[in-house]
Picture (cartoon, one colour):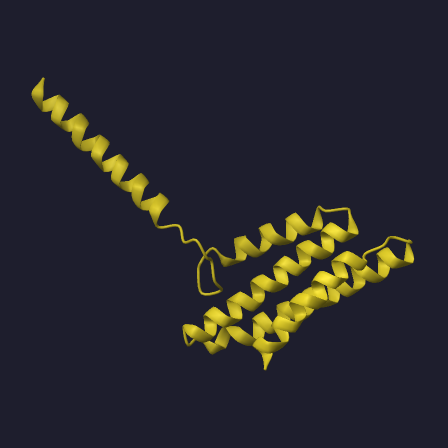
Amino acid sequence: MRRILWRVIICCLFVVGITGTAVWSHPAVVDPDHREYIAKLIKEALQVGSVQDPVEKILGLLEMAEGRIGEIERMEEKNKPEYIPGLVGAYRTIVRNIEATAKQATGEGIDVTEALEAVERSTKKHTEVFD
């Protein structure tokens, strides 16, 4: 009986150890050099793509752009310049999507002034990063 009890305890500790390692090893920030980065990008794109309101979509795209800026800064800090051209390209694509969404919304008579003001404030910081 004791032998079985010890085996059960050891198995439980093993399972808890594996589960704890899996939970604690998930990084708070997923950068381009992490294996889960593509999944993060897909999740972001699906979230923004599912939004119908142009103002919310622009703000979601702005959040994505700010994410790319943060990634550029972290890749600089990590001394991994090979990721920066791709991140800059992704940033530019997001900005083009913001412009296209704003143009389409304006053409439909939707006021996106508030969202565009937020974009303008953020792009001032973004410009500093690119300089």
